[in-house]
Length: 489
Ligand code: NAD
Image (cartoon, rainbow, N blue to C red; front, side, top):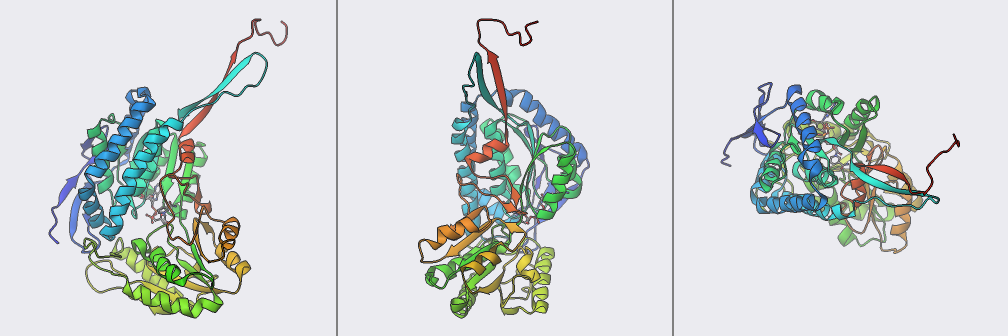
């Protein structure tokens, strides 16, 4: 694969700039090990500059931009992403190593999300509640302020859009910190934002390491709100950093989501969807259905069907449109995934497919099937974040719900059954932010997405999301003819 190496600066106050600390890092294509680009990494001084630019924009041009103009600009940004989708898709595919067929959909969703919030601006409104007497009262919705947004490497452009669109719609300004390994598409989107006329400082992008640059951004006293997507461990640390200054925070964290197949399900749908549900993005998805719970009477049939279908998944060059699963994000991550598989073997799981890293320069790991897993095992409890499914049998509906809920996470669950009452019944009993019934998909612009339990709190993609970027102010005005004199003084 011939690749043109390119340099990327930080994006602060509407332009690309050199990093104050001078750090430039090589970005490598995980599928080939070949250098893709060089990107500047932000130091604390750069974060300070970005937060200052965001504050100036909030108190200056963006604060004065009326909602209809914000809406027009977000629609324009959606158009620009759409117009540049080919370049963005290829760049993201090379940078993350995921199959281009997946990335195409993610870039389209990023544009859709800007459109959704461009329209949703029309719903931002206070209300007047009659409270009696001579008091006229109403509420105002105001942007919460400067937002620090921190996103991981698995869906760089899509998750940046999930975060940026509602914040900008609400009238906030943003300092976005992408993962240092995958900053390229977010930097492109920031440039597109400037080109369509979003004022300088409204959207700043500062890639850098989490524990140093990221933590400095979270702690920064110029930041009013933190929105984070990443692991539960880091989310917990960010919550701690936000506690002392009582900073607003929302967290989208990890998952160990169940796919529950009942014997009465249409297995011709359930099995290939279960394969898609774990191996999409090579399992590097917060919503990966990494535990496949199967009713015992159908267990052998599902294990066989799943293993055969997993063997048919097209793994290979991420840029090939036929590829369904590309590489993992890095060889270091691949090794971490493999260590989990070894733990599973030691715990007594049977490895029915995959289970060994693929030779070569790329960070490839094959679709891996662990059967005979018990829910107490590490491989059933910990987020592996790779193409590894744990197959777990259950005896009845009660036990299915008990196993589904018996993890610290609660992001997504999928239920497969032909019984029309069972799906909605389980949807009430499963502790997860999204429950799918006979459908493997989990996220759409407009539908709330987020976690129960240690999968976090706050919802993305939805009208509700605007609320986490808004403050509500109550205004009380006296309209009586007589002056107010509570103590008759
Ligand atoms: P991570 O927590 O290691 O890193 C995520 C981001 O946080 C990166 O930008 C990183 O640089 C930054 N970071 C790390 N330490 C930090 C600190 N101390 N202060 C500030 N920032 C810090 O997560 P990861 O391994 O890169 O991403 C995968 C995780 O993200 C998985 O757990 C996955 O489930 C989760 N995820 C959740 C969702 C969701 O919507 N719930 C979506 C995608 C991914």
